[in-house]
Length: 222
Image (cartoon, rainbow, N blue to C red; front, side, top):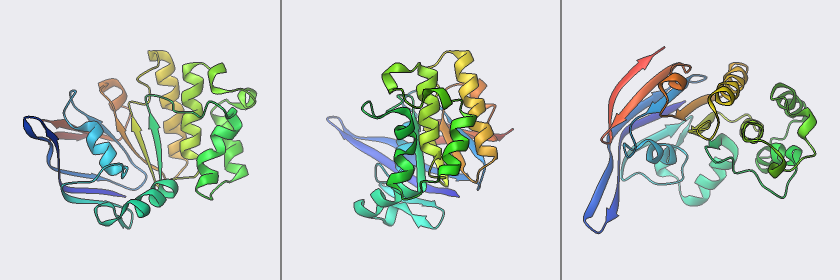
């Protein structure tokens, strides 16, 4: 599903180029889950943004399914993001002017993949049935993140990218949202790459890798 090979990324600073990723290799199997760990500044979010096609590599290859991201132009990347991946962030990023039911369907409709049956399953399994007519500001943090998960999964993406998706939630709510996510992934073909600083959360995923100083320091499977 995901292959990252010899990826380098640096950014210009007044003091000169800052190397963030220095030859990272990473693989994620179809239908599996992987936790990406590392201290602040290790390159976790940078790598996630590269895999999401939100930034370009300096050198190296990123292949997702049959697509080489490093060979695609901005228009191709935008179309690919709309149809092939789901994104979940620490900030819920719901559309404040849309009700829950419309937020849930937004990505799937944009991708031309709206499926009323799958939408109904997501609503039931995420416990959102009584919240459909509410607006995001009327929801708790845990409820908003459940809506964000449903929106990301509604188009049945091949890859779900999550950047600290439970970072704004208390531990009990975090565990609840994570369990809902893993249960849904077990019943779908979607693979998961999650950035997290929490060993407790990482232990729930199939495997993990640790970035240190822009390089892959270690990896392990559950």
